[in-house]
Amino acid sequence: MTHVFGPVPSRRLGLSLGVDLIPSKTCTFDCIYCQVGRTTNKTLEEGPFVPVGEVVAQIEERLLICTPDVITLAGSGEPTLYSEIAGVIQGIKGITKTDVVLLTNGSLFWREEVRRRVLEADIIMPTLSSAFDATFRSIHRPHHGLDLKTVVKGLRLLRKDYTGRLYLEVVLLAGINDTQREIRGLKALIDRIHPEKIQLNTVVRPPSDARAKPLDRDRLEEIKLFFGEKAEIIATTPVLGKAGQGDLLVKQFLDMVKRRPLSPTDAADSLGLSLEGAKGLIKGLVIKGFIRRQEHLGEVFYLINEEDGR
Image 1 (cartoon, rainbow, N blue to C red):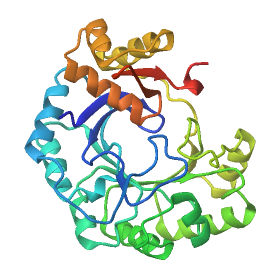
Image 2 (spheres, rainbow, N blue to C red):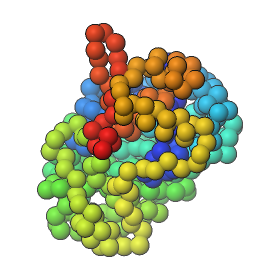
Image 3 (cartoon, rainbow, N blue to C red):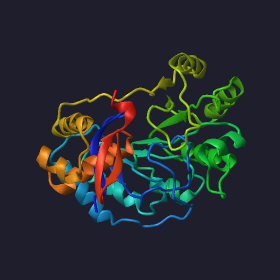
Image 4 (cartoon, rainbow, N blue to C red):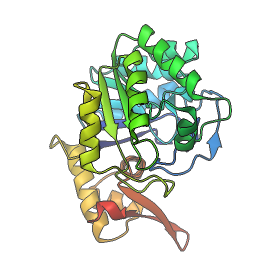
């Protein structure tokens, strides 16, 4: 099984080598803006889903052919549900000096054991998109065992325990959490958490629910100004960074798939990759929302997402 994907260009991190530690769409939330699709297993139950040694070996193998800016624990579910995440972070630290990033919805940090497991990550990037529980539930559709108060408590405890860089993502949706009341409430809440950065995001690729609508640039700029000097807008299409082999493969694959649907075998043959290597590249682009999956006569093909095919 392929646990490593990419590297793929990231709006926030440059060239990111992704690590998927969770069964597909196993999450504590079912966010309406998610570009990976609807959550199929909404849970608070942690587990040792994949072998640590296998994951670290795949990362080490991939680093032989690419030089990412960061290694990101993310993927198609909530990574803090993985009970062995500390072992993966330590394993990565043993093979490279590349920064380890945890991309998380931030829902489980009220659990001391979850906070303890991730303290060696270089950057933690949780999400907080409302100061009001009703809005929180509307956007994230959380597991019934979660509420906003619990999530915020966890983020404040994480800030107390964690000495690394904390970048807080705010996903802004038109007509849902973009009112002055919402923005004022968010700023007051974020000021209590004290992140190094506030990263303003909105919908840039097809979401799982059509109710998730993007904010225009002018409104994003107004909110950035209100939040202050820590705030930055990240809601732009990522650009390719280093001209390394992994970066060029991403560009080549996207150029090809804009012209015609490709199967994993097509991609492997065209790019000179193993089938597993091609699947890893494709997985990253699906998770990032660049491409989508489609079946035809029992075979799987990948197509460019409409918003990226302009």
